[in-house]
Figure 1 (cartoon, one colour):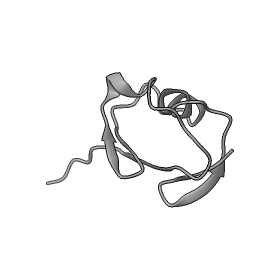
Figure 2 (cartoon, one colour):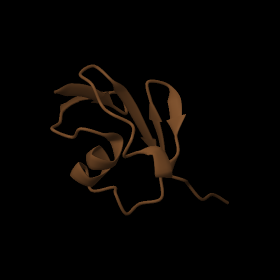
Figure 3 (tube, rainbow, N blue to C red):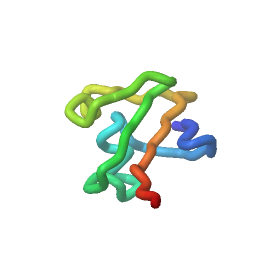
Figure 4 (tube, rainbow, N blue to C red):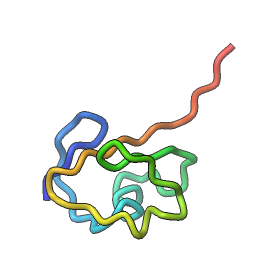
Length: 65
């Protein structure tokens, strides 16, 4: 299926948000996620089912000084 990940159209076979993070090799990373504009907590990612056309944002924390 085709989804939008951080503004980029991609094709995925992931059924849920947790599987998508594994597919893009961010499953071990500390990141914040949103599905169609709604925050998804890390313990809810397996239940967050993906559908064609969904918009996913993955954000990593940044350190500054």
